Length: 138
Image 1 (cartoon, helix red, strand yellow):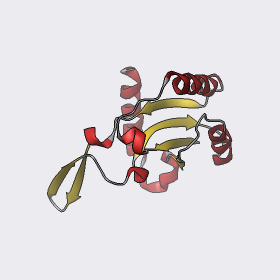
Image 2 (cartoon, one colour):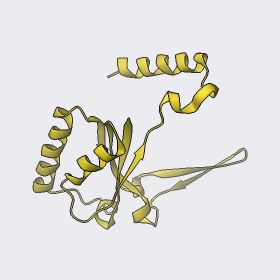
Image 3 (cartoon, one colour):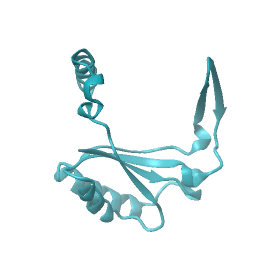
């Protein structure tokens, strides 16, 4: 099972305040544990919403709104992508994260098998080709 682990933004991350050396060191140690255990597939921090944009799709229209966005608690400051056996395992890993004052959300990633018969053999083959192309670029 794959899980997206979403670290919520706060006033500091939205203000562009970067973590200090102590926090970065603790996070690198934690990330090393995830990598050694074979859990981490990806991890990235995100710039504040002031450097982003949203695109709203309404019929045939595309409406672009530049950041910043007002509700920091609804924004994402970073993420991990983990491969684990269960949601419970993901929660146990997350409990070990070196956070103090933040909120983190865990969401399971859909797998091809979750889509049932609608995900035809042709679509599965197309997805496999796309994944291979992405992997080849790494």
